Image (cartoon, rainbow, N blue to C red):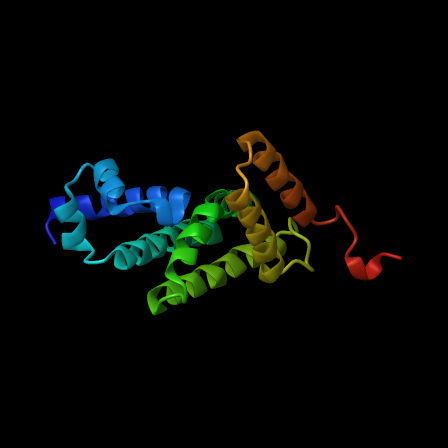
Length: 187
């Protein structure tokens, strides 16, 4: 693929994630084209259907997080890297949920990259636990549950950025080792 075609494709996917991630079914391919700075024919040359465009935007979403997660897994400070990753996943989660809801059953490419992401998050988590920064009883399932919870909340009702930021801080503090006893030790 030519460089300009790759650049167009990337702008189209970024625009699609923004348009469909915030507007859902109300978003249009025309709006995607306008935001990407290309003609509608260029959009359809890369993505013959709206569904193909949404699928590719969702794969791009997961791939971007996967790249960040892999970097977190080898970062010098695993605690800061994991915190930044969880924050990014929550902040972008509403868009992901909206895109996924437009596809119905997740296509194989989405399932594959989402699985790779979850495995990489688990690796980053274990690394932060190995340095004693994250509670040993926290697993990737707990992280994903909390990410989904905040993502669903922000998808359903717009949340001021400052409120979301504080909510993420509360979650991150709850993961910290030595801060709170595990539920098995509570009366």
